Image 1 (cartoon, rainbow, N blue to C red):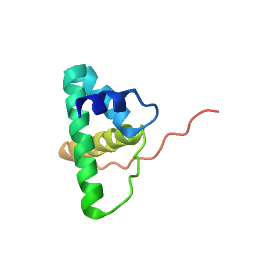
Image 2 (cartoon, rainbow, N blue to C red; image 1 turned 90 degrees about the vertical axis):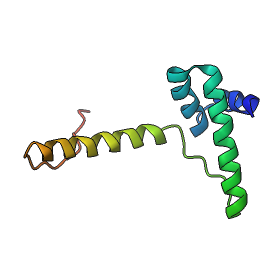
Image 3 (cartoon, rainbow, N blue to C red; image 1 turned 30 degrees about the vertical axis):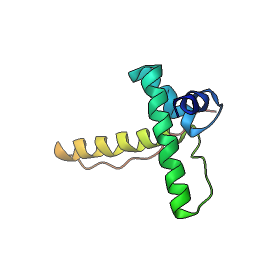
Image 4 (cartoon, one colour; image 1 turned 45 degrees about the vertical axis):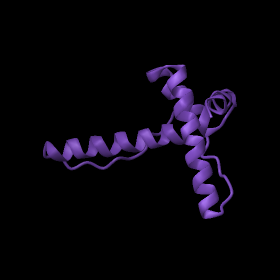
Length: 94
């Protein structure tokens, strides 16, 4: 499974590669490979028990999840300070 984790970390444009890179930065390459091997086993278990096909979440999934968590955290902090806030997307200059 460790070899599968390393191989998944080398694939381009998939969820497991993005997760591997994040873990490698924080924990090192060996622990990241073990963690990705574990993720592969968990994915396989859920696919087999639910009789579903694998759908890759994509490399941007973790980035979007982090952005949403940061937005919620900021709103909670503003609310704790006594401010009511709504978020609107910023218009990018063309």
